[in-house]
Image: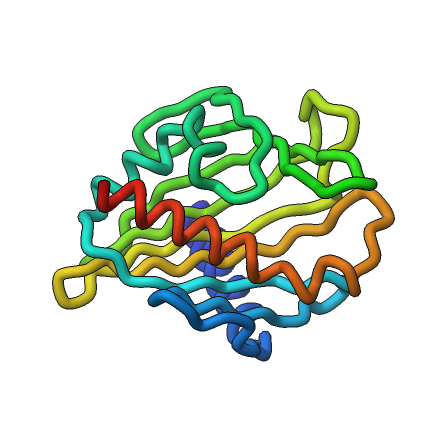
Length: 194
């Protein structure tokens, strides 16, 4: 019972945090909408991307669990490695590709697949820099993906916020942050429809 209450309160806090953010449209193209928002206590923006795709929840989960193939569709991903996987959880290593003159950064991620009451699914993404085997690891990274059935399609929402460990100016990242989820969704949709 204590665990249930703790999980419930955590989810409520996350939802309130997201509700307090002021989202601004950054890109609306090819059926994909991307919004950005300031995050308290951070100089780096968060993003939220939304698209509807004609597929099944099972097919999307299949792609999300195929970690070795992430570099084929997950934008700015240099390499990945599956650490562990079960029906409802997986851990993996991901190296993010940064443009010159900056170095790539990595992180170990914990992804939890949670079936929602009624329909839909929420996949939480929690970055953990400890034990990440690379020269530079991200300072922080977390977010979620939600899947909601909607008129014969699946509405996907991808929320994420991260901070690099390198001294990369926010004015360099923030105006371009929307490209990552846009390119990711575009490539994922192509994979799902192929």
